[in-house]
Length: 518
Image 1 (cartoon, rainbow, N blue to C red):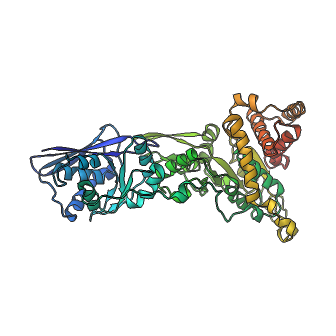
Image 2 (image 1 turned 60 degrees about the vertical axis):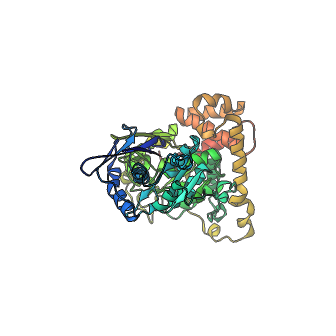
């Protein structure tokens, strides 16, 4: 009996190591075994493969069938190996004809992915973008379920074939009916336009300081905390942040798509190049926010990589969830370790948070707020000092005044206040940062601050006075410099002047001045 070799790939974090599916048919009593560290879903493929072969009018070989997923020490999970296992059995049993014939042999060297239905239909799988990107780097063509072909072609661009049924793949291997390569959707891949969204900054009435903070945050990727009563516009502001962000670069888009591909939600090719916006509910667990589970999957902070992570009702999140954000906010990377596997995911996200000033939300309104001082203190203390220190901009969002809310005058609807007008200015500020340091200001390390964030003499005096008077920590001092550098970039200034530092300090200390966190 012969041994068949079919190529596929596993998925470990953001890596897709090559897996060779080896199938051996031997004499003896009927027995079907899969070795090579298969997880439960892979072990169950025996029943799916058997039913798919029989219902596709193939013979299921009698005797011992041994499937080895090499390398043996690499964990394999999911239904992606159904198709290569089925093809290996057909090749080893000679039911696909002479695979040594040159054309057929070349096609067998493709990589194959797909979960099999009991009737032989191919069902979509997770992680195809990641597998296709790695296959393209190795110069391999791939065959995937048709439902995954668009995703795969976004990563590989060429050499992607989509099939709906096992019989289509077999006909392709035999040369009877070749599967046409999938053509990538150019309107998704080559789009360089800003994200189309109905959420426009011009919809927000009043809130000039909050809108200014949002623009500065978008320009330098700075984290923001909005504090205000219900209905003041905190969530409305946060949801308009993506409209200010520029499209992702090709490299950034591939990173974001790779992370989405291996997540439970999967990757949507229509979102390629669009900065992600994630808004988890406050009941979310630590695993869902930072990543975890049996197979160390990415969490919300990684799914928001190069985009926005919006955490509404911040104090309502579990304390462990909030504290788990501290390290990735500082480093831009999250390491997820589990008993079965270990994965490292990027987590360079723009964090925007919103909260009420007290449990009832109406702190300061004697007619509506009945919260006792100790209750208010406990509520605010759910956000630790170290986490608060990592938030660059802290803004009090007061209720919108009646005349601002109902203002329909042309002045309130000026095009200059629209996202479409502000987004190019944000792009220009970001371009200055990338040209100067190769990264955005929020991501500058301490050693780079002395090179790129040197204030003028007047600015240095103001900063020293602020450190002495306000008692800024070293981290707050450095973050103030980064924010001031972004304000200068947005204004087109080559130097950090005193007015840039004054605004940065005000945006950082606004809540302290309002005695919300004293």
